[in-house]
Image 1 (cartoon, rainbow, N blue to C red):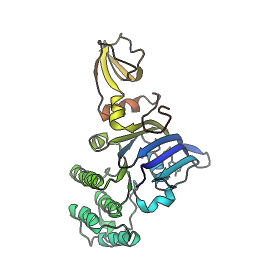
Image 2: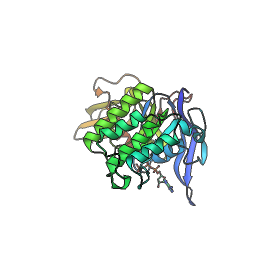
Image 3: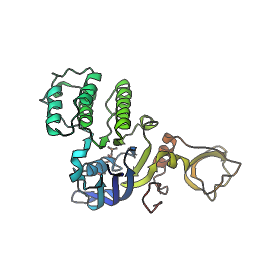
Image 4: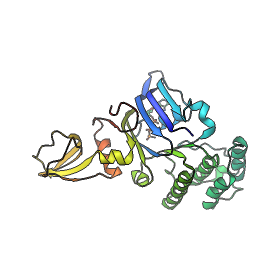
Length: 295
Ligand SMILES: Nc1ncnc2c1ncn2[C@@H]1O[C@H](COP(=O)(O)OP(=O)(O)OP(=O)(O)O)[C@@H](O)[C@H]1O
């Protein structure tokens, strides 16, 4: 197994005649075996990045390598569940899994695929077109996990699942990934569902990398501080600040010890992400292991 699951350098993607940039100068490195959350506002470039990693799109600039190879060459070891989860509507659930087995004969694992379908109480003879959005998601995840991938790319996988199914599928997914050392890259807008599940973070904004690195390191590099509105925060980097009356609350990157006048806590993932979404101009921070540590 390669040590780096995905590596991007100066990665850019432009679409259409006006060559609108969906991704621009993205650089990051994701070590193998991580569970990586990809977050960012609508249109940030998350789906574009996942499609590039899956080899379904080609970069306009720069490079992306997957498991040490060009994405198209790594397809056998990669499973990708796209946002719209394309499945054949006329096939039954059982036929869909059979199709998965035939396409992935060397890797396919019936047990895991059938378990995921059975946990959702799905009738194996039901046609895909008769399933609800959440039930189709379950079949798409069964196909993806049945393939026994080294890298699993999931684009907002839980969006149409009910809370119970979301909780149960997330647990199955995480247990399976932990047991097999699978790298999972998962985009989501529901930050609460990522907390506790992910150990690596990639935050995109306007097609650029805003935060990248191990989640614990990124959290530890920030403090949520509260204090008097007239107290200064120099020399610390202020990501975002808000004043209510005489009180100031800010997310900062401390440059040395914080003054005693500030009450400070390590932010949660949600606080970290929300502050960066509210402050799109805040300086980016990369704590992954590529040589240039900050961009
Ligand atoms: N096929 C395409 N043709 C033209 N523009 C595209 C295409 N795909 C994406 N884009 C543009 O690229 C940008 C990034 O889109 P992308 O779907 O990657 O964002 P996202 O972060 O996944 O958004 P969301 O959270 O809404 O799913 C957007 O401005 C979008 O309009």
